[in-house]
Image (cartoon, rainbow, N blue to C red):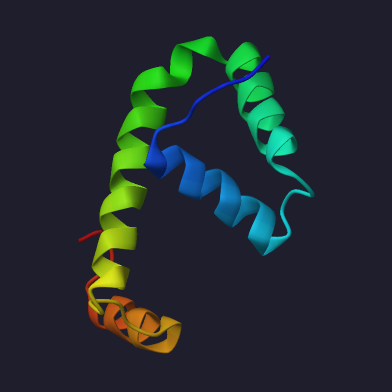
Length: 82
Protein backbone atom coordinates (compact mmCIF):
# COMPACT_ATOMS: atom_id res chain seq x y z
CA UNK A 1 0.00 0.00 0.00
CA UNK A 2 1.23 3.49 -0.80
CA UNK A 3 0.02 6.51 1.13
CA UNK A 4 0.41 10.15 0.15
CA UNK A 5 0.79 12.61 3.01
CA UNK A 6 0.33 16.35 3.00
CA UNK A 7 3.58 18.30 3.44
CA UNK A 8 2.95 18.96 7.15
CA UNK A 9 2.48 15.26 7.95
CA UNK A 10 5.40 14.29 5.73
CA UNK A 11 7.64 16.70 7.66
CA UNK A 12 6.35 15.34 10.97
CA UNK A 13 7.16 11.77 9.93
CA UNK A 14 10.62 12.78 8.71
CA UNK A 15 11.29 14.70 11.94
CA UNK A 16 10.28 11.71 14.05
CA UNK A 17 12.72 9.47 12.17
CA UNK A 18 15.45 12.11 12.25
CA UNK A 19 15.02 12.57 16.01
CA UNK A 20 15.59 8.85 16.53
CA UNK A 21 12.13 8.15 17.95
CA UNK A 22 11.57 5.76 15.04
CA UNK A 23 13.92 3.90 12.70
CA UNK A 24 11.93 4.46 9.53
CA UNK A 25 8.83 6.27 8.25
CA UNK A 26 6.63 3.18 8.24
CA UNK A 27 7.10 2.83 12.01
CA UNK A 28 5.74 6.35 12.56
CA UNK A 29 2.64 5.61 10.48
CA UNK A 30 2.13 2.23 12.17
CA UNK A 31 2.38 3.84 15.62
CA UNK A 32 -0.18 6.46 14.68
CA UNK A 33 -2.59 3.89 13.31
CA UNK A 34 -2.13 1.65 16.35
CA UNK A 35 -2.95 4.56 18.62
CA UNK A 36 -6.04 5.36 16.57
CA UNK A 37 -7.17 1.74 16.81
CA UNK A 38 -6.80 1.81 20.60
CA UNK A 39 -8.62 5.11 21.11
CA UNK A 40 -10.72 6.07 18.08
CA UNK A 41 -12.78 8.57 20.09
CA UNK A 42 -9.93 10.96 20.81
CA UNK A 43 -9.96 12.69 17.41
CA UNK A 44 -11.15 16.09 18.70
CA UNK A 45 -8.50 16.30 21.40
CA UNK A 46 -5.80 15.08 19.04
CA UNK A 47 -6.78 17.64 16.40
CA UNK A 48 -6.66 20.45 18.97
CA UNK A 49 -3.33 19.22 20.27
CA UNK A 50 -1.92 18.95 16.74
CA UNK A 51 -3.07 22.51 15.99
CA UNK A 52 -1.48 23.80 19.20
CA UNK A 53 1.78 21.99 18.43
CA UNK A 54 1.79 23.38 14.88
CA UNK A 55 1.23 26.90 16.22
CA UNK A 56 4.09 26.47 18.71
CA UNK A 57 6.42 25.14 16.01
CA UNK A 58 5.56 28.13 13.80
CA UNK A 59 6.38 30.47 16.68
CA UNK A 60 9.72 28.74 17.22
CA UNK A 61 10.49 28.99 13.49
CA UNK A 62 9.89 32.75 13.75
CA UNK A 63 12.31 32.97 16.68
CA UNK A 64 9.59 33.60 19.24
CA UNK A 65 10.72 30.81 21.54
CA UNK A 66 12.48 31.00 24.88
CA UNK A 67 14.88 28.85 26.79
CA UNK A 68 13.54 26.30 29.26
CA UNK A 69 15.14 28.27 32.12
CA UNK A 70 13.29 31.42 31.03
CA UNK A 71 10.00 29.52 30.79
CA UNK A 72 10.42 28.08 34.30
CA UNK A 73 11.36 31.51 35.63
CA UNK A 74 8.19 33.01 34.16
CA UNK A 75 6.08 30.20 35.58
CA UNK A 76 7.56 30.68 39.05
CA UNK A 77 6.55 34.35 38.99
CA UNK A 78 2.88 33.54 38.27
CA UNK A 79 0.50 32.94 41.18
CA UNK A 80 -0.50 29.28 41.48
CA UNK A 81 -3.69 28.43 39.58
CA UNK A 82 -3.53 31.35 37.16
